[in-house]
Image 1 (cartoon, rainbow, N blue to C red):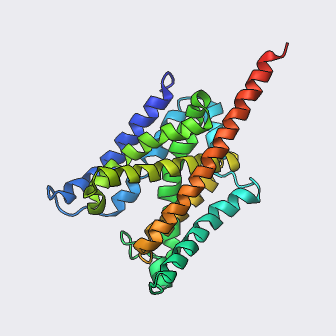
Image 2 (cartoon, one colour; image 1 turned 90 degrees about the vertical axis):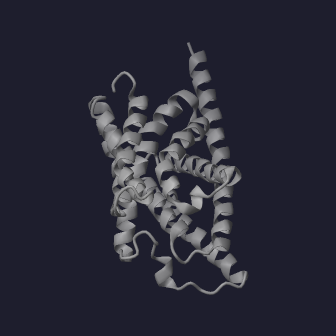
Image 3 (cartoon, rainbow, N blue to C red; image 1 turned 60 degrees about the vertical axis):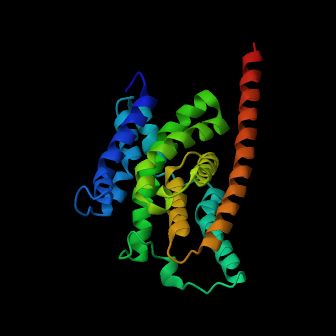
Length: 273
């Protein structure tokens, strides 16, 4: 782990999550009886557990840095405005397009309920999203892997490269979901592009929030609720996806600019006597 922390992280993240998700796949194919849906939640903490296990072997400096980022909240108003206001604005835009296209108002209960966990109240749903999908993923992908990839490839390329293992990690969930399993190559390519956009957007937010994993977890959790709640129609989802793509393009430009400034700064420091 000390010699190759990044490969060790990826190996552990995949192994832990896929092991916990395996009963869901077995039940999906009829090999076993029904598996509890909560395994989806528990398996999602694989990246966080992997990050913590590897970081524990890297010394007190690495452990202290990750621990500080878990609860860092004093990052200014802009990261919080985007983390909370961004998903709400996205939902409002999607609903507006839905209503303009002649759709009916879905009602507040549908907008605060997801099909996989219909019995969770609003507060419980937000907490579950924050802990399992927010922290569960972001502590690993953006908390551990992204900084190490950035040190070698720069901000933009690190975000692009991280999208590949992030997408492959979702593979058991993709196979289990009938809608995604029926996709052709073109639609699967579109799904990967959406994750690529998300990877770039999350990397930009990480820089804006000075590496705060709390901000990233809040944004990730709220975005999940907005994109998969029962009140979102196909028309609304398409318009929301287009808006996220625009955000991702803007984030890619910002990360590219950040990388160019970083290279210029390092070159200037190297030229100094």
